[in-house]
Image (cartoon, rainbow, N blue to C red; front, side, top):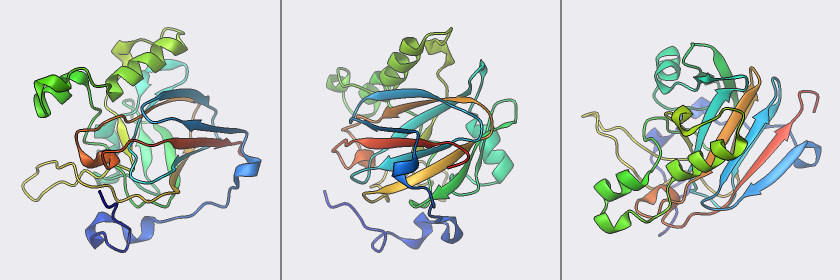
Length: 231
C-alpha cells in the first residue's frame, strides 16, 4: 500500500495551527527506547517530564492509556477530554483529562496533526466480529494492555483497562456520525510530545492490527523518549 504523504492528504485531516515542532534533542533525553511492532510498553512519567512518542516508519498506530500513578481509578477519559476542548481530535494544546476532570498531560508538540480517541483498541473479540471468525487467534491491543498492567503489578489489573487514545491513527467521522478506519496521515519520524501534569503511568500497545489500514497493514516500531523539565 502506498502511504499518503502530507501533501497528498486532504486538508480536513489537519488543524492548521496544531503543527508544532519541539526544541528537545534526543541526546538530552533521560529515557530512550524502541518498542517493536505488536509489543506493549509501560512506564511512570513524573510531573513536568516530557514524553515523546515517535512514529518511526510512518502510519503506525500507538494505542495509549494514562493513569494517575498513585490511584489507578483516576485514568484518561475520552469523554471529558472531548467535552472540555470541544473537539473530537487530539493535537497541540489538548489537555488529556482524567475521569475526575483533572489534566493528566498536555500535548505540547505535534508534527502529525491530529490523533484519534474514538476508535478504541482492537481485541480478539472485535477482530472476530468485524473481520472473520478465523481472525480470533490474531494478537490484539487488548492483550498487550493486559500483559503490560499485569507485569507492572502494584495492584494494577485488567479491570483497570479503559478507553484509549490512538496516536497517529486516522479515524474520520462522517457527517452522518459514522466512524471509519482510513489510511494513516502520519509519515516516518512524525511525533507527539506530552507534558505530564501529574505523575502518570503511561501504557502503550504498539498496535499489531493487520485487518484494517491503521498500520498500513504492516505494523512497525515506535520510539519513546522522556526528558526532565530542565532539559
